Length: 287
Image 1 (spheres, rainbow, N blue to C red):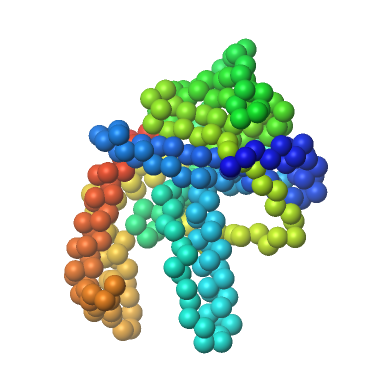
Image 2: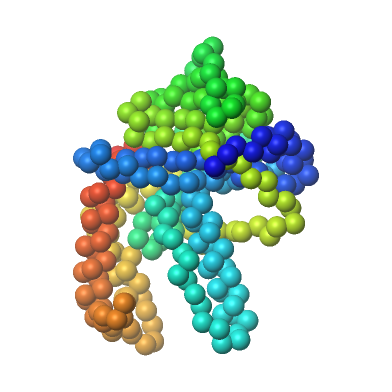
């Protein structure tokens, strides 16, 4: 993608008029610390508004839009079949939101089927260097921090007067246009911008308001319990079901009993935990 320089020029005017700007980052990461040859790429979006920002996968935004349209179609009737073939599963399902001007940060994730909202209290403490460079046409300055169990090098653009950045990063006198950890396990780089006018309806997260709110310490306990029994939520949901009991389900032409579904889900979740272990925030996920 090309950087749209006019979006930067009009940035502050857009903020003041209730428009939002979407900063699009290429996120390159190594999900498995034991298989460092495997690299995953995902386009992420930092959407900034007057009240704050949210950071999530571009595919997740598309997925939400398709599901919203399908639900409206279903509720409106008409007998048209719902087509979900355009949905491409995002590699990153977590979302980070920040409130301005306090930069109160919330990390949203759904281990299994339970949506969680984790309030993050730790802030990145930056050391700003005099070293300057250029990233994709932006004049940038270097800053470093030890944060979330990793050492980070960031490049921020004073010409873009937003003290925000990808994921949990913020607090520099300009937008963070590139940041990566010292091992190059996680790298974010700005690849484009998009203006979104106030006339476009806001797409709210489908589960907002229904998450379980946890602080960092409670999440650590929750996560360790989840690792031991990743289908606990499914088991509890089955036990709490009143009325008709679903004894089997069919996927791709094959029927599965309730017990088979539990075994398959447990196998898939344990495999995911095994192969996706190189978390950006090591402190949050450490035992």
